[in-house]
Length: 175
Image (tube, rainbow, N blue to C red; front, side, top):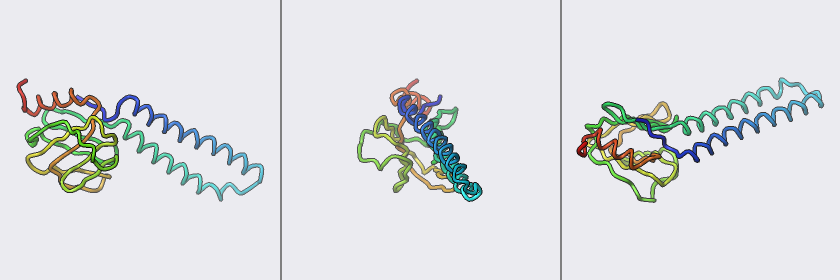
């Protein structure tokens, strides 16, 4: 089973932001291109700036797309928590000691944070789930780095259904 991180409205907002970035890129490109042709400026001077601009817009929109399409997955033997290109972690069901709702409002600012032995994977302070582990699990973040944590706090769209399904898979309650 796959469970999305963001609600449908939040995903639509992220998609709208991506569309807005590309629209701004397109409009500014045509505006500058017409301006360059009128002034007869060498286009090679601005080409490097345009490549940099387009590259940064593509990277930022790719980041937003990866977040909008992020999900948590319940497989046969493990839970996979994905948070876009920011990071992911694999948790075996046998390593889970406790699963609970997390209603604290004092979590770090949105995004993926690893503080002490806790990994926070949330933008909103709603629909949070807390998983405590029997042993430390590796968290991979920003493609290159690894850390070990023993608690994961993350948001999920359908929290009640997710916790019920995770409890079944982990064997924490009768099926």
